[in-house]
Length: 458
Image (tube, rainbow, N blue to C red; front, side, top):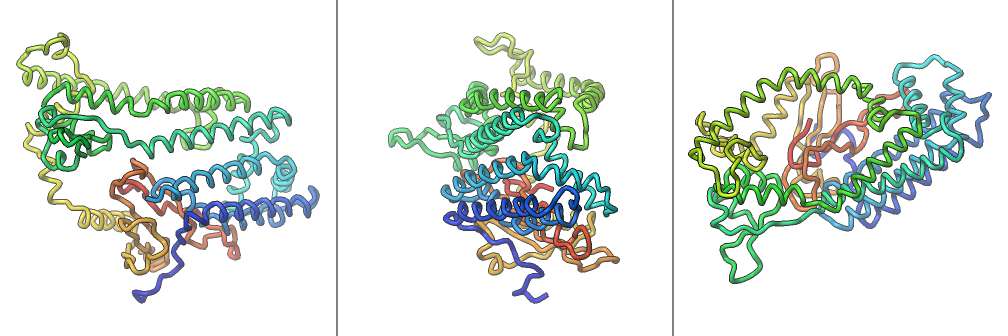
């Protein structure tokens, strides 16, 4: 393949100014398709080709743009783009909720199921999934008034979730520490911390609540009061999310019970590998039984280390300190325990810079999954990425039976920056293969293409 060509067009980055207009066009196209199916097909005529196929096709035509739009709220450095993405996702969610609450469309999809046509496995799975979307919105379960109540509550929950997640993404709080309070923290972290805006406070650092700061303070700060202050402040940094969380939990339970489920967990697990809360609880019980003895052994070892470190002397005002492993002390003594084995993770990390580690990880994936990853030059990424840190690869099948078949693209956005989702995450951008419900279909699976996080995820 020539260096200036790609096997398939890369997804187009949608400018912030076009996000909402593009979203509205997509919603219009979706609704037009649903209306057309309802207006042109009778229950007696309903079949896979005239009811299900148009829905599949419109989803495939639009899913690339909706995937890119949804990604912007997690990773775009542009505040306008993030806000537009949030609003667009709200509109798309409401569109999806309205679609899965359409009784006129539901009866046609149900008629297709009753026709019992001979279909391949993928087609049958899509039909089952579509019917489940309707049932989980109350179709065939609730009367009209109850279904409307369910839909209204579901949309309100989505609004609360967006606000909750937006608060997390935009959290930018700091806590003040003097250099004396930060004794023990490595110089590389002290240099990274913000400085006090006051000119007379040259010895004051403004420490954020990023994972890097979490590790630096809780693992290295010698003063336990410093560690406690940071841990408590970090645990309380998003108090505005507490009432949102409470309301979400309450409304989720009410909606699940309205549909006949015992709990929200039962509702969610129905479509997961673990089908019931009982199964999950059984698994957790078995893990607890197997792991608790080893956990107690390791915790007792840390407590012994703490007692030796404090010289069996309790600190003033904390008489039970040596007999308890407080959460703000755990990481400090875990680091000390690691040093006892002469492991210095900071020194080790110097031998594993990201430009070398990432290709090595891809080599492991390539070996295990029989894939081949080819870096995409930056010049070909213009117009398809949201930040200069983003890297991308084309992915190819390396199995003998299908060698050199194009699989898709992998994007990696691995470095921390403000207002970016702070955690491991994989965001689907668009379908890339042409694996369909039959040889002429353009339906394809949604592939995990973008780890839009500060770490590579699989």
